[in-house]
Image 1 (cartoon, one colour):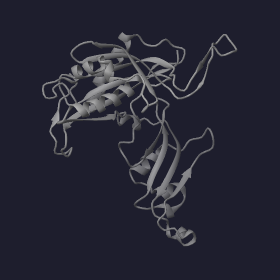
Image 2 (cartoon, rainbow, N blue to C red):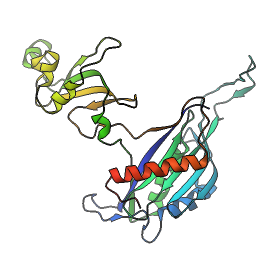
Image 3 (cartoon, helix red, strand yellow):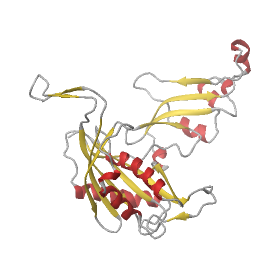
Image 4 (cartoon, rainbow, N blue to C red):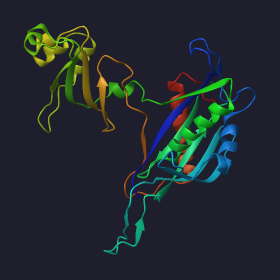
Length: 305
């Protein structure tokens, strides 16, 4: 079985048609008397709401089962894939193709989605299982967002990918490269290129197998050194300079971050099973999602119970 991973989106609700800072917020467990869990259950259970495939999208989605596990959790099992690529289907033990796939056919795989709606708080979490063929949760999120917007005249749903906590950046294991980007050309360069309004980037890329010293990030963040001085180009010291760093976390993922921005952590992403390992059972999948739900809601300042 190929590798499977877990991603998650946060869902928040507020008054529609009002500036976010002025709008009243709604708990997902009480959307004018309705619980998001019930709304999503009824929507996903109706085949008319979820087209198998349509001309406006290359995605294919087939719901197999929708189960309300308790007052906070909804588990959906589905097939997901994409159409549009013509090709041949091969068998591991046969040299010739066993089936021809047309542009209108979509190879699929089974993935699961869990919606977690806490009894209290202003955030619900939509967990999506990812495989080589995508994630059914991603397609469901897009379809439900459109449905919810049309059905609710007074409530707006805002959603975004949940990011790793700030501790991810505190445990960077390697700095792969640095890029200093300034948005006004230094005087020494402007005279020759005659392009004062340009942006110039200077990249430091170590040789293969080598990394930049970790302390450089801290020195830059605390302004102990200036960006241009780090790379030996003082003309690149500018108040409007950005410093981008490609860093590697303890989980071996790499992420390009803006050194001066605190919200540069990557999206929350967890491995459920590695290549050649069996996929998690439904009970194991649900257990993982619930565990992460408590952790993430606490990080977002929510009770989660």
